[in-house]
Length: 348
Image 1 (tube, rainbow, N blue to C red):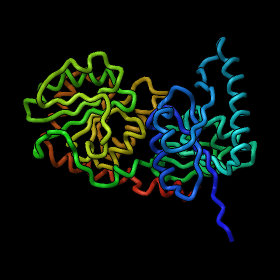
Image 2 (image 1 turned 90 degrees about the horizontal axis):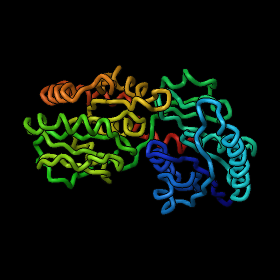
Image 3 (image 1 turned 120 degrees about the vertical axis):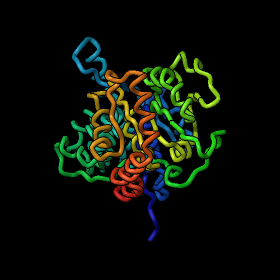
Image 4 (image 1 turned 180 degrees about the vertical axis):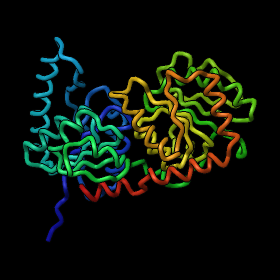
């Protein structure tokens, strides 16, 4: 009997939090022909074409309130469903996998109109609106956090964790000139950067330098003051490719609480001081951070309550408490599913 290759459409767009887990799963699907669904002018346009055929649809997020633009958005959304439906037929797609976000909506609905199975991965502790609305239409909803199931009107859920790139599961080396015995603080703002956190860190960093710590600060591309601090123990980088090696070497991370970043922190067992992005949709980063906090894997600090002096003091307190850092490392194990990508691939 001849083996028939499965043709799969992956719908993942926008930020690393959506794209990197999808790529981790795709890498495990060696017996599938994969095509990708994205939107124009987002991260997938530079990240995906070297790996998979990329199709773009004209779509934007839904407004939270009705307004003059609502009808235009709804027309564009209806057109996007038909566009995806045509793509499924023309490319002979047999299944759809999506990591949520607004691109998931036309992908899920078009697939169901075609009678195709859909697996949705939701990485956040508080599922996004699209996930909550469309979970009943999915064959299976794979969850990054166990407790996310309570927000969904479907029993077809399974906890699989959030996939990370394979490099995070293997020992890496760091190519930055940082002494092996020096404490290393890694500041992570997520794929978009975090200007408010950047400001706090630059104001607090002098005390950390005095304590002998080095700082690798991932500033993102949107901080006009990214080059304002200069010190031999300070490395400001807009982006760093070897995140796995960096987090494996880190003594402590100061980080936003996007689900993808948290999965990487768990994979590398990196203790963290978490500052959720206060304007994230429905404050979902705070829900994510609380999952780490309640298990003792991280400390949670709301941005509006944090001053540079408070941040400086808390980081120094942690650096001077190696037993506490060790406990935090150990407790990340309960949040990490090392074979998450393989589990999702098996579902597909």
